[in-house]
Length: 225
Image (cartoon, one colour):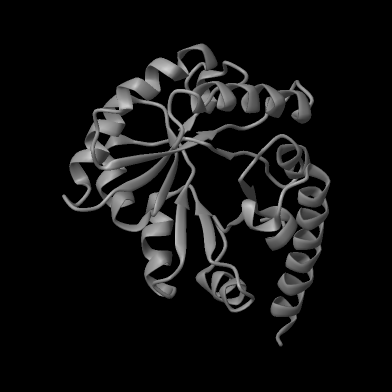
């Protein structure tokens, strides 16, 4: 193994152990939590190493970078787009991203729906604003049920659930508890939208404790760019 392979392998083993402990503590089984390794700004060679170590889910937030990088990896990779969406980039994003975690605009959803092949679906998460900061995006919690109803007219979009980033000025566990309560509320009306994408390198254990099904970790595996 190269030095970089050894480094990534050790970091990945450490994170997987912590995920396992957090999942056990939450009373769930390990297969209920998906690790998405955030590979933005890192080269395809790093992604290939992670792939060889068993990772299949990769997160990106820049279309220009990911549209090229994704072509260099095996077809069974699952690519997750988690950045703010620009309408003029949606066609390209739809080509490479298997899951979009940051839908917060019905106009974007409408355009995405029109880009999906007739006999297929595109998986999406609704991004929720837990801090009401416009530059971070997201639907206000009280508007999520209405927003979800609006998405129901798009036949080619499969709403997996909710996504959020913990506010900077609030304990992550408290924020993620609010997200879980909102998720429990919408599942009563939309049972299929039962997943939660939450938790990053510094707060994923709190997210898992509060029901996260998808966690997005970059720096603790790949290092700081």
